[in-house]
Length: 467
Image 1 (cartoon, helix red, strand yellow):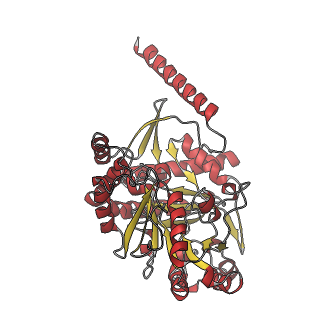
Image 2 (cartoon, rainbow, N blue to C red):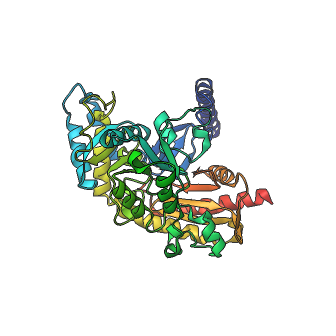
Image 3 (cartoon, helix red, strand yellow):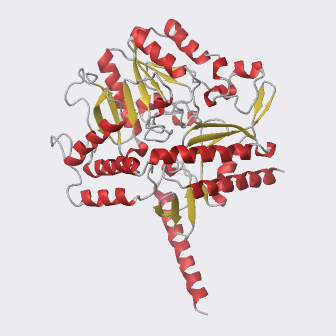
């Protein structure tokens, strides 16, 4: 007779703690930091997050692609605990080296292409992009930077100028950094040439194997004309590109696009910077997203997110000699190469190797895509496109009538909310109606099945509510 009252008391106490925590956050957190829900996370394990009210959620966001080895992987936790008991912070300007930093450099040399042998470590993807811009300008003696529509590179002043996935990131913060030119990125689903040609779905997106031989090459042509009309190649230091567009909608470029960008860079002495913050570290089914496109080699590669399983680590890798025009002291940062964070990154890379996580990414990615394709067979799903690589998959909603594509405004947000109601975390992506699947790379077969079942149920919930 006493069990139920005790359980009820515990539940009430948990809700009270959650309310108190939320009240504190609301009092001190600015509205500029968007929140997806009112959950108060207490702990995580693998693909699951637990909340203060005793519920657990299947995490198909992995902290926006950060907890690559899952929440609290025991080997990463052990490495962090051991390092925290030795030395937490051996600042990179004060000391010539510390052991975890050197160990990480050795690990990086094993997963990065051999020609990218110089590393700079910092805290976030945006900071790494800022330093990549500095490096390119110093190396080439030029100032101009070319980025692509839909790209997301950060919210600091320099990286924000390269970002166009949504206007919310730069609205009201101008003037932005000058010298930036934005070129179209291949969005094959909405390509006017494809629509007018009558090619229909599924498989119409060139980047997904649906007719890449017929690609209009419009974005490449636009880039060539940009260098004839808007700016001179001799003024361009670098072209910055996400090999697979992340926040902009998980777009996979068609065959030949990145190779064409590389060729233009070679013709004009422009550095190619691959932003692998979201697509790197096994996420796409390769160690790095650009490796899905043979014949492409970056001059600079930017990494972050999954490299340290949730600890704030980012950096860039560049060709030998690329830093030669950067004077000592021109790059750095208080927390760059922090000892505990380096230990986490070393453990992360070891886990990815030892547990064949890359193999799991490819197997679970195929499983997830196959399941989504099955769901899309129902016209009621309103799924227009499924795209991406590995465990980096996007689902766009809408309908196509001839050369016209339309979508119910806000449907992606409603689906995210419906998934949340069914205890699964999901995120939207880009300015169009797209959701993204970005689970831990260690997700299991049964968890993918559960995610698909939950997603299908959420689609039915949204359809019923709209009827």
